[in-house]
Length: 213
Image 1 (cartoon, rainbow, N blue to C red):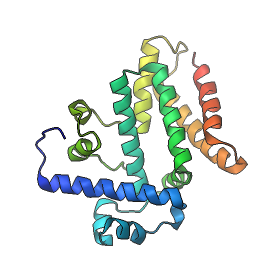
Image 2 (spheres, rainbow, N blue to C red):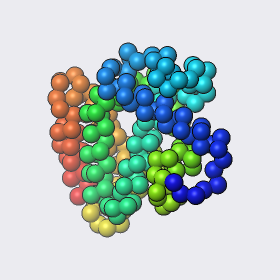
Image 3 (tube, helix red, strand yellow):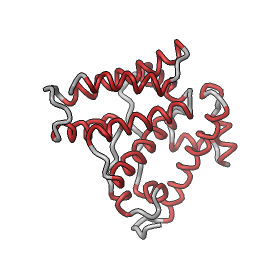
Image 4 (cartoon, one colour):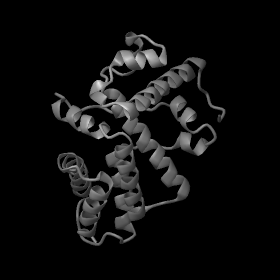
């Protein structure tokens, strides 16, 4: 692990937070998210419910953290491989579809959580100690900015515009909104019509991107 100014307490906290995430992901491979109880996760990790809720105020917040970590990992990989523009956008959606297929109930419950929340949900932060554990041999990754799913799309869409891969005039915020609308709509239609998500999402995202070229 890269030598950083991180206290022992910060390291222990980061390990515990990522362990909670890891055990939740293991549970998601076996069961629907609705059938997973906080007590199940606490038993696997070896902590109390009080400790769990110190890190995640709601059970669903673990899903927000899972998506945040996924976005960070994806961003680091894109940076390491120097993948930019539309190639990066397509890569992001391929990885997103893989995540959804690996954990089928993940995005359905996240959509529900977003829909019923009284306020805009704040992302669960990733601290330096967590970055160091996720990428112990990469100082560049630890320094890298943490971007949410929408900001990651925005970054690479702007690259595509700059490189004239996207030629039709449009506000990047509107493009991101359309892509997100297509993404969440595809997840629901895939569920309702029992269609493979990856193929449906790729087809729909490609259609949206082609409309800007």
